[in-house]
Structure formats: C-alpha cells, structure tokens
Image (cartoon, rainbow, N blue to C red):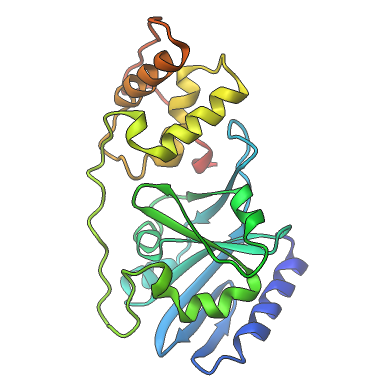
Length: 258
C-alpha cells in the first residue's frame, strides 16, 4: 500500500470511528490503538492482494510481519485485530482475533488467506463470515461497516466477550489430518490447483498446503502431507501410479517466509 493511500485510509478510519460514543481512538499510527466499550483494542492493517503463484487467482493473502511492539500487545489483555485491506473493493478481512494474537511474532511473516470472490460479494452492507479452516474463521466487510463490526464483534467471533476481562482461546486442533477430504478448505485448494494444471507435482501441492495449513496441522510431517495428497490425487486421476517419496529433511522455501 502506497504511503499516500495508507494516510488517506487512516484518515477515513478516524472519520468513521470518532462519531461512535462507545469507540475511543487513543492513537492512529502504524498500529491503531482504541477502546471499544471500554475494552482495549489494537488494529494492524496490511494490503490484501493476490497470493501469487502457485495459488489460484481467487486466493488472496495479507502478511502479518514480526514487529517489536507486538511483544507487549501479545502479553496484554487487549484484543488484537489483523485487517487485510482490499483497496479495489474497499473491504476488510479480519481473521479470528484470538488465534491471530496467538501467532504474533511467531516468525518473520505469517500469511493469512482469503478469497477474492468473497471480497467482491462484501462490497455492500453485508458482513460475510467464512472459513479457510474448520476452526479458523474470518469475516469480510466493507470499510464503512468497521464501526458496526467493532461494536458487535462478539456476533462474529462469539468467544470474545467485551463484558469480561478474561478472554480465552478454544482448544486448538489436534494438529493432524488423515485425509484431504476431512478438511473442505484443503480439498478446495488442491482441486483449484489441479484444475489449473493437471500435471502439477505432488511436491508443489505439498509445499502449498504446508504454507497455508501447516500452522494448524502442526503434527504433520512432510511425508504425512505427501501420503494424504498422493492418495487424493490418485483418486482424482483414477490411477495407481506411485508418486515420489521425500524425506523429512527436504527443504522448501515457502511464500510465507518471503
């Protein structure tokens, strides 16, 4: 996002929020600090754009960087919102705040994904709830709906209760998946990639899936991903072809590390 575009965006956010009596802006800098119904919030915004190859054109991404100021936010009781901003459609995507806060400063960049068609559908008054992961929700809404979203955030993320000083995160996934079809988001991504290129390698599919889903299925090793993806592709192709195996120490350079 260009500097002048970011300055205008932040000015517009100030104009939207300062009229709300239950929202108090404390500072509008790189990290926006505010109070909603007396509860502390921090908002960090990055551009939401096409995720790049080898992703389908419908896949978008915003990257949350490592920043020193996130250390204190992560330790605090404040709610942290990471907003991806789609400048073309003027919409925000907001990912599950509790899981997002839990991932602050885990690595140099953490990628958060969305879908372009959902962003295009949210250009009006509708706030759309979606999911790329069975237990990882995100919400897409037009910029003008930001005050409403903040004031009613518990409607979209019920685990957040602004009336309580204690916010807890639900149990994480068991960290493993035994079949591609057990997770609709993984199946959808592989189907999209395969539709674009039927000759795509298992290695490419594995690296893409680890990049997007590895944080959640953290117990999965490379050979585990290889096994379930090979099995699924064999099913699609209707063949018994044996795909290449690779060891756990194989090295990939994932987009999320760029």
